Image (cartoon, rainbow over all chains, first blue to last red; front, side, top):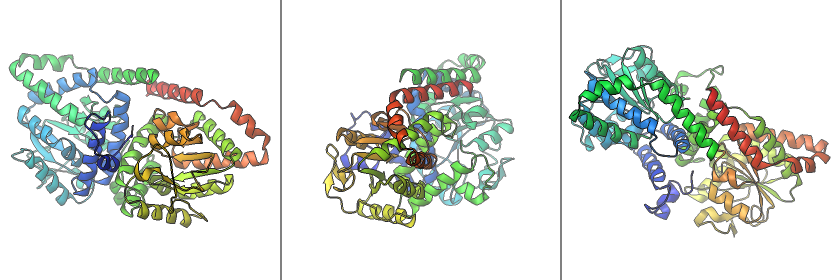
Amino acid sequence: MGLLIGWEARRLKIPKSHPRYKSLTTREKLVKAVERGLAVKEGLIAHGRGEAFDYLLGEKTTGFAEKAEKAAAAYLLRADAPVISVNGNAAALAPKQLVKLGKVVNAKLEANVFYGKRVERIEQITRELKRNGARKVLGSNPDARIPGLKGQRALCASNGIYASDLVLVPLEDGDRTQALAAMGKTVIAIDLNPLSRTSLAAKVSIVDELTRAVPNIAGFATGFKRNPKQIAETIREFDNDNNLSALLKFIRDRLAKL
Amino acid sequence: MGLLIGWEARRLKIPKSHPRYKSLTTREKLVKAVERGLAVKEGLIAHGRGEAFDYLLGEKTTGFAEKAEKAAAAYLLRADAPVISVNGNAAALAPKQLVKLGKVVNAKLEANVFYGKRVERIEQITRELKRNGARKVLGSNPDARIPGLKGQRALCASNGIYASDLVLVPLEDGDRTQALAAMGKTVIAIDLNPLSRTSLAAKVSIVDELTRAVPNIAGFATGFKRNPKQIAETIREFDNDNNLSALLKFIRDRLAKL
């Protein structure tokens, strides 16, 4: 972890063959996103936490993550009004993939921010998603509130998250995930920390890196569209608690071998 | 992890009684350090990685860390020319503790940077250490190079790190730790990732949070000064590889219980 990072990688023109190329360019992408106001400094710290957990996973999609991604695709297709919630880090790291997933599963996109100046940052996120093919992004005119949250974090769109029956939350904080679950919504989380309150509160906890997880969900959804009978079966068979426990065991076994 | 963080904590005036108070104020400190050019954005990501590992440790000093801290104190007192290497994150998080440790074990302080504009950042680190009681800080006139490193990262002081027989590196990258060890120096690392190249390359690997580790080392050093016979014994009895293995087992057991 951390052979050549950020500034140093830029300076040394890091080759694509470098074993840490993906991780280094991702860091770089996020640092640049902070410079243009799309992400915030606090988001960099959160990203670092994710990096550490990804390192423990071997920096690849585990079989457990894949299972959760398949279940997520099934839930998204079964939902009546699914919404993908997009914050600064998510917009910086996987804008194209999130927009594509929204189209595949027919989900709305809604921008939300945790830190900083809401209006400016929502605008940045919206612009980034539109630049990557989004037709419409909710969030800039919030006219409803998520019960139990304080301040701007409670704000949402009445025709978006508020009215949704399912919310996909990539890189979300625990309070917001719990509040959405308390509203009775099906919450699907993408979070590299299997022990976070977000992972523990979600109906489907995808413990995987965002840019790996989102295209996987879209891929499974495309498969389900050809074979819709599998949707109910996949939902019936998925057990989130068991899947999280098995993943923790996987990390423990990896730690024993390292 | 991440109930109320950074900006939000500031806004909500987080009380000292909050279970995540320490972690939240530390984040805040580092974000502010970036704003004034003492630390850099890449350092925030590194801090996040550390946070994740600290979370796995239970956010307290383990018995294994304490053993390493005691050994570090012994090695520091036995050294002829020990140097404490201070980067932006270290200066932002534990300036007072590092200055105090330098006095207790009679070690020089040398500022070094990994990213950004060297001259300006070395000046910021130097100023921060002096503000916290340091008389002299090396690093602003580097006249030697660490073999095997490229660019500004190789720079050091001929009467500091270059001539030292021991270097304490808090929050250091793997390349630099390995290069210092290859020079034949005793390297003591403080790094929350027990699997990092830094932890694996060091003679004494302290897997603990900086502001907890540094005062502990100083405390043990004070004890040794009253009882100098224990120094050689402590060094003889300390086995870094065994200690790291035991720590990894501790993390695995914790993961099994969580």
